[in-house]
Every structure is written in C-alpha cells, then in structure tokens.
Image (cartoon, rainbow, N blue to C red; front, side, top):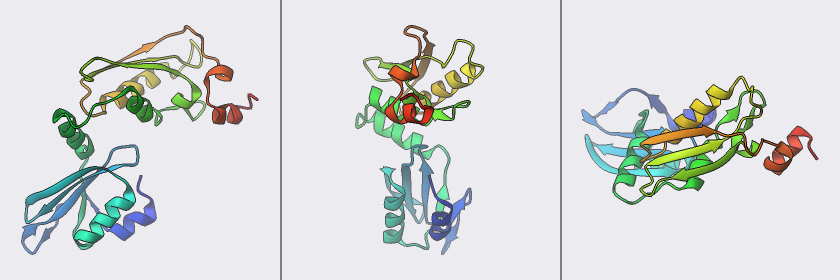
Length: 194
C-alpha cells in the first residue's frame, strides 16, 4: 500500500489523464491489494512497456528513470488485467500457496486477526488447468454472525486472482476449529493461548 508521505513525493494523479506537450504520456499503475504494483508506460499515447509485481520502491525508481514529471495515473483493475494476460500467455499459473497468500488479507471482523493465521482455512484445491478454486474453511463457531461475510470475502479474494474463473467456498466443521492446535504461534500469543 502507498503511504501518505510517499504519495506526495510521487505526485500521483487519481483518475485523470494529463496531456504533456499535446501528447498522452503517462504511467498507469494499480495496487494488486497485496502491496505489489502493475505499471504501464505510455509515451505519446503509445504503450512502451508494462510490468507486474513491482514493489513501491521499484515503481518509484522506475518513475525516476523515465522522468519524474511524467504523471502517475491510478487505473483500477489494471493489476488484475495485466496478471490475467500473463496467465493466459502461459507465463503464470496460480498455485494453492498463492491463494493462501492472497487470503492472508482477509480478517475475522470480530477478532481483527487474519483468517489464515487463525487456522480457519483448512485447504485450497485447484483443478488441473488452474482456473477453478475451492477453498475449505471453518468459522470460529457454528453460530458466527460474520460467517456469510467471511465466506463472501474469501470468494471475492480468490476470484480476484489472475486466471481464476470460479471460486467455491465450503464451510466445514470437521475437525472443529481449535486455535490451540490450528492458529499460528503469533496468533496464539495474541490470544494468550500459551
């Protein structure tokens, strides 16, 4: 994510296209939600190059290399579109580990802790072509009032990954969730389960 102070130094422009010397020169960018950026560099309206998986510092460095006066324009959905193109070309395959990493952004609204670290994600299965994902998860209790919200958020995160066409979320109760056995050490420490 972009830090407020960094935004000012990069002179980011949200939702505007700036004409420089009567040409459309710009760097389009988008945050993938996991702290990585996708970029497309246009010079005089022509696409010069595109990148995915840039860190903020890499984006800032590239911006300095091509010219710090060139506007950065936020384009929502660019990261997913570029990653989808990369996936379609066969350069990228989604793995269960990548799905788990993406799901780390989902937090239990009541505990305000990540559901992956809580041990609520029991497994991720992908079909052979990597387009369909099934996430098996549990909830902190069968009566969890946030269950539907968590299931929808897990589905949305999985569908947001490049190349994923369908995402199914199955809530399972066997084995019952037990943070003493399933949560990460950091979460056990936060919950005082030692």
